[in-house]
View 1 (tube, rainbow over the protein chains, first blue to last red):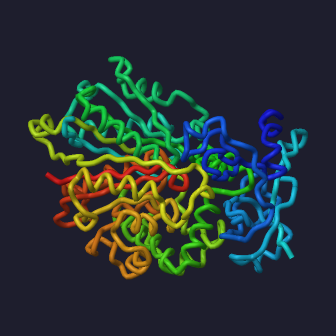
View 2: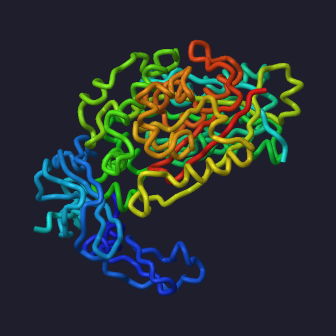
View 3: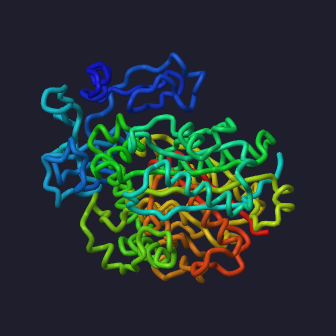
Length: 134
Length: 387
């Protein structure tokens, strides 16, 4: 079982889609990085928190039928890569949707949901998922 | 740098080897390779072993285990374990090539081994999922299969390949696997078998996915000058290249090509001084059918948009334009992860030494092996030449 710290330190990104912006080249990243992979040394120490857009479009998706144990009760469930309105690509689950009506290009927004839990008495993990943006 | 040759190969049967332990399959492949090289084993002064996950058998320190049970520890021969997800074996091979080329070692044994069926399927799948980004892909509910499924959907959406063309990669794999006595699956299948099998992550079905397997493979390498005097069949290693990309698929501009494959291939062709059309036989990483289609394009064998059609038309069968995955590939031969990259090299080396029996490709001069970790985060491309 993982410690609480492992989940706690990722809360800004998991709950609020907080990423990073490079103060040198202005490239944006999700999840956060402590160094811009393009500016490298020149950008080190210049990475700032960046709020990723909560809205976007489905870039591609899949409906999962064979899932890990922690998500067994969700089967079948949808996952997607979403192109956010500010141009980033992010992966997550797509919920509250008719699995037969998901399409590339469909408008979605991020919401906070339960992801999974560490057994019956462990920590419950929360994070973003996507829902149709009607 | 010295030129390097493969002088011996060995491979176990791939499959659900319930009667065999990790240590026994690892040793079996190594002994076969040393026998094939006509050596006693005491010549070996270095071991490199590709092994993906300690979680399958709950054993860290695989390098020491192999050194011990292969009898190399009695001579205190150093052993190194490499891990790069699905490319673990490919990386081990490259480390072995570098060890001999540099002059640091005179005879190395490169092995690849994995024992996956000691763990239940769901747990094994979770281990595979952690070759993607565990924090931002797997933890969010994505599986490795779903990542390849999303690539598949994008390829189809962009008009690069049809669902049928992608599925046909598994038909080719099984056709060849039927000719390989060591393959996990020796039954030919049809397109319908793939398309009508149960969904794993839409649009990918069970028959689009390589199985979980047990198995091991090994090669023995020495300097080319030494190989010439050994009196055994050998092949020359002309290139062993490796490239990296982002860990998470969503951090890429284009998910329908693996830049690590194109980069490693470009370097390999440059070093070998050849072009893709000079390759007669290739083993590519078809952990998923779509991975095979992408490999054919990224390695330059077919233009983007032509690979799927070529596979469906039988152009990658033995006797076709280029023989691809003559061993059965990961799909039909089986996919003991860490063994895979080394087993590919074994197949190419055997093809180039005319030792591939019923699967023999005629007059092959150059062969290529491509091994992929995660969703193309690490890729090795190696080229061998017949002597």
